[in-house]
Length: 243
Image 1 (cartoon, rainbow, N blue to C red):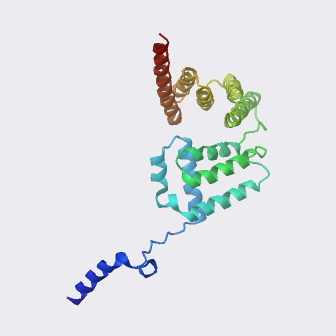
Image 2 (cartoon, rainbow, N blue to C red):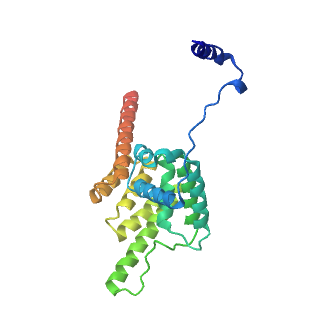
Image 3 (cartoon, rainbow, N blue to C red):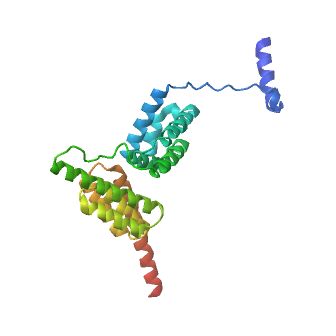
């Protein structure tokens, strides 16, 4: 009886108590994973984003680590290690840049900063060099490298809002490697930024034709299609006003 009365009394006066007298709510302490576990988690995240994961899939993959401050500290230190290397993996750098706009939160922002710094370095790991190969294989590798160089240049121009220059670079990449789905997708982004949604849609459709499971191209295609519809409606209204 006394215990119940005491509980009732506490509930009654608790709302009017000053903050320093109110009972503290303790949050469950988050467990820090090992560096190897963080590295594996991050590699899987980068791979997933590159395959077109949406925000829901990213959060499902990260789980409790989406708000893990230790994970952010690990990523920052990992970035510092990559920055100290004389050369950089430019393919990884572009993947890290992608993470800033797909729902990765602060982790994506940290990753994007690392990616920008890596692109300023000479290419190293991840770039194939034609050494000790036959003439045919050497020529194929050289062409692949050239196409990737044009693609990366176009991406940088796209980031700098030089959309016509980006389109020219993507066209060079496509001329070397016609089935370069990533170049077609980025070409669509450049045309979309210029407001030419019909050419953007055509580029996305080419990327999807080459790679039917290209989720990012499918998403960009749907956005461009929606914007084209809105533009056509706007033009029709304007014509009615003139008439």
